[in-house]
Image (cartoon, rainbow, N blue to C red; front, side, top):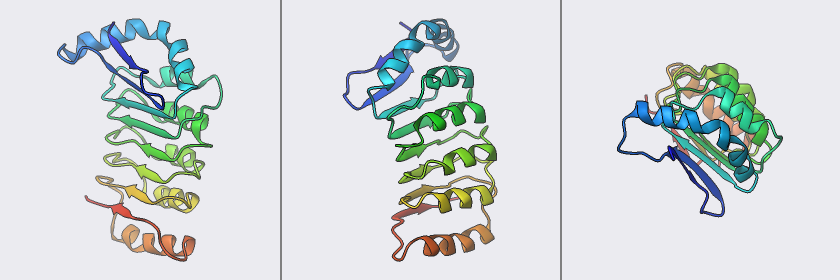
Amino acid sequence: RGLELDNTASRYIHLSPAYAHSSAIAVAMAISAELPEILPSLRSCLEQKQLLRIAKAGWLTSSMLTSICSGGALNIESVRLIDCNGIDDAGLVAVLNCVSTNLKRLNLYSNPQLTGSILDAIAKCSSLELLSLSKCSQLPADGILKVVRACPNLIELNLEGIKSIDDSFVAELPAVLKVRFLVPNVTLLDLLM
């Protein structure tokens, strides 16, 4: 098989190319051929898991994510979509709409193709405790502040490499956090640029 679906752990599902030593083109072709037949199985597995982790999946498209999430709400608490350059805002919004009620951790590391339109969907995930938007360089600072305001449980925020973060954003962020918390509980704020 060209796709490894790690369904052995009781709490999570990991989707990754099984041919680590093959060329990226060969892997993408093998995975693309198999995806239509495994989408129902993937959805079924996700209904029993709490974590979805997809990394370096250039073959993954927004339409695939929309298909997986079309069956209604999932009890996913953690989503990691790392370096998935085939997805756009619409695909991510489909995922977030499907998991927003229970989502506690969202890691979107290195998805520079995402734009500010995803921030409204992220803001609806009010149970978020961890949010990593590192290297999602197109996101606007005002939209990020809206997310921070909407997520009262947020304790870790990674904004490394976001171009819109400037001195005024850094100056405003503590005020946003103080309004929300009597005693700020943010344990990690990463603003490396």
